[in-house]
Image 1 (cartoon, rainbow, N blue to C red):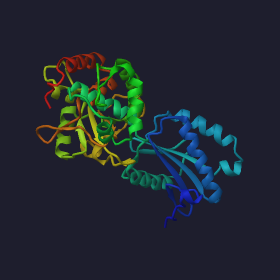
Image 2 (cartoon, rainbow, N blue to C red; image 1 turned 180 degrees about the vertical axis):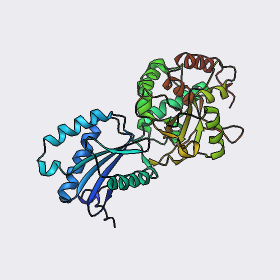
Image 3 (cartoon, rainbow, N blue to C red; image 1 turned 60 degrees about the vertical axis):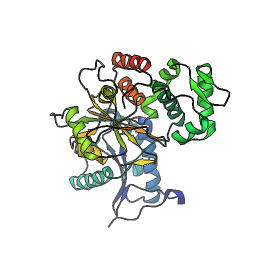
Image 4 (cartoon, rainbow, N blue to C red; image 1 turned 90 degrees about the horizontal axis):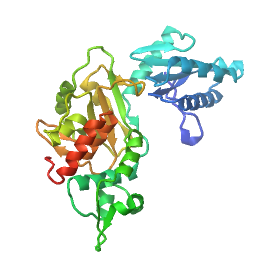
Length: 351
């Protein structure tokens, strides 16, 4: 029977799984060696609490190569006393395969770890803290492209779910691009190209984007996945990217849909991604940016989603989110064309 993990806020180490013989940490989609080192340090804390157990670090679909992880594991354990190093194990789970790296792990242990991995996949995933200033910027841009007219700071703060200082700080950065009216309302004078470029450079972090690739070798088409999104009938999920851009401007010259972009609206610190399995069980988190995603999930962290209800039970992300998706997908020419249309047809976008 598994033991009850200790609580971190009581000063005790809390494992993701623990029994009478071993305990471990499970990390999904690890993307940097720094996070790997931090996880190993946490295991050392656990070993100080349970010195007789074996400590397992389980990396699920890491975005760092097995060889780099094995080398780092070797360097880390060499610096430890043998009595401690002998209690550390690294397990990597990729595409359903679970293996020990660099040394093998008993088959019975791997089976047990596999069960822990499957259980962890069903838990809500943690999200980074929301970037409220980037949300303010995108709300301002939404008002501009839809010709929504002057705004108040209170209205922006309510839509974003932030305080007045966050709105004021964003407006200060935009400086001369903001037209301030006598009644304390304001609006953008034009599209803020420099601020937009800075946001795009960090948009994946700001929106906590997660890419999914197909592991079956026979991927479903984005159009097929789109139909499955409609069948979910989820109010917190909207379609963006190429499909969204075509929804707003059908005349746009966007041939083909390299991926399906989904926008998930949430104010929670953790989110459940089980819906991706319902779209296609062959979809798994991408290991690197070089992988070609079939689905990209972006998180919208403001109070109001600004989604628009379409036909066939599909919701559409707002035009600015669709524009960000095109940039993120590397469709620069299409993004520039879409932006030109948004500028030309301000206030006439078909929702």
